[in-house]
Length: 92
Image 1 (spheres, rainbow, N blue to C red):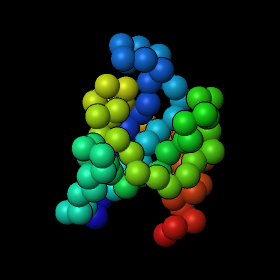
Image 2 (cartoon, rainbow, N blue to C red):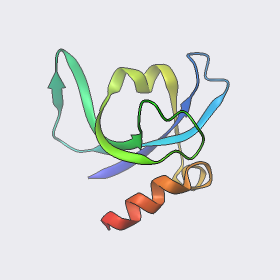
Image 3 (tube, one colour):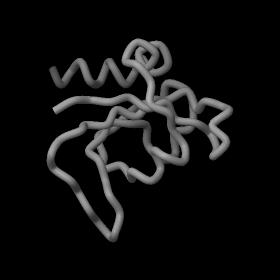
Image 4 (tube, rainbow, N blue to C red):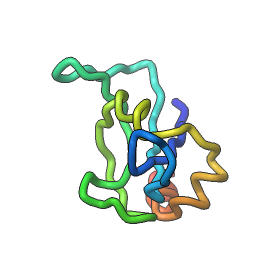
């Protein structure tokens, strides 16, 4: 299993960062629900659109990644969203 990091943006134009990162677990297991492809992930909740928001584990819609996110390095992800890594470190 590998983790990929995606910077979340406030809109489809990908111009203004939301200040949060989505950690997606890429595995051989694919989750499909209601016709959508979902990834196991850790990210800020729907209502938390503040930079460095608290995070929670979830199933995340793959389509949203393409429309509101860009893949980034772990180093950049750590700079943008320290709370995400505080949570991930508790899992290790």
